[in-house]
Length: 538
Ligand SMILES: [Zn+2]
Image (cartoon, rainbow, N blue to C red; front, side, top):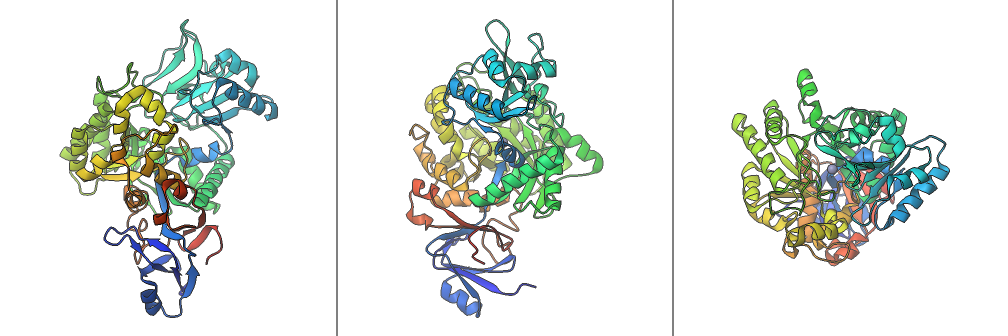
């Protein structure tokens, strides 16, 4: 058994404990934290300990990304990056596809992610066809909810101008009624070679691949995540494809980051038939909250608002009819699941709260820990209801940077009330920040900096009063995020008995502005006391 104690000192220690968030030194033994406090005290308590020099840097409980599309991120890292501003026009988009077509074997698919047509008009499908040649082309919108395809894909899928829109989605058509290749929300599932049928329970980006390809994607994202300082992630949309990939990655010893799976709601009855309810698993790989979808996205204009609060011309996507959504949430709640529901517009949030309240009435239970994912535009009344139900708001600060200018254009001044953290915190709602990678960057320091800035790409501040302080942002990405994923007994704070999951950064975060903080180097990432990334400190 590992008995040697290591003391990390000569820097700053963020503990993740509210009574005493900062201290001087940290002691770990093997895979466990054994103490925090002054350097002198720890030396006295652990005589003979090995000293690790933080060299003026900061050690934190490892960052926890409570809403992340882990496997999809790994896939995106190997596909064409179409994110703005790298791709800022339809000409750029076509050039990237042409380049990929030139280096892809004949007939093999071309994948891309992150296009943002709020920034430019998409090219007509004839131009996509011209540059993609005979390759099937699937380009994911930056929200992950929409896909742009060429005629070859539509033809293979049997989708033509006469195909009706599926419930919860739409095939975009031009003024003459011809398909443009853009498939919104559930329509994605009709055109992609998907591994699973998720019905109208969510956007279907679960593309069929071999297990080896999927495990390689997991390993790729795992390496990227630990290099960015993450030690735990929750995959916010898990099907049999993802769970198989994570299990196999673990078996092959390439899954280092702690992974919590949030299975998608289309599997609810299957789980019921074998008596499975989360949380289930261990502290390295587990099943956590059940994930449901209420509405679409802010970026695609498919979020569901009340009249007068949302977009000029609303085209909300409801994945379920309103009564069905409430009933589905109630059923999952009564089955014993912790539940997380994607809801952006106030109308969707209100329905989700109806569902949670119905569950609570029928089957009250301690620690049901409901989450609302994104929680874009909760009204003051919704925030009160969230407080009463102990709902966790799982937010994405980097949306405000990457898409904030688009929100301003579509919502005007109301964009300042998106993700209203100050109101939520003052009401006693637990606020968690996360990435939603690969929609935006998975880097926790970028997420923290964007939470402190709330600034758009063009430099407009959205709701300055809702900015988080450094400490608030760190709690929201460590201790409170650990609570949101159900692992707070093991991770999220540096307390004796918890896992030695550490992120070590090069500077003292308290002395840095958000830009400096975002540029800070990750010196090392440690999981269960073992280095997963960085300089050998141990
Ligand atoms: Zn997501």
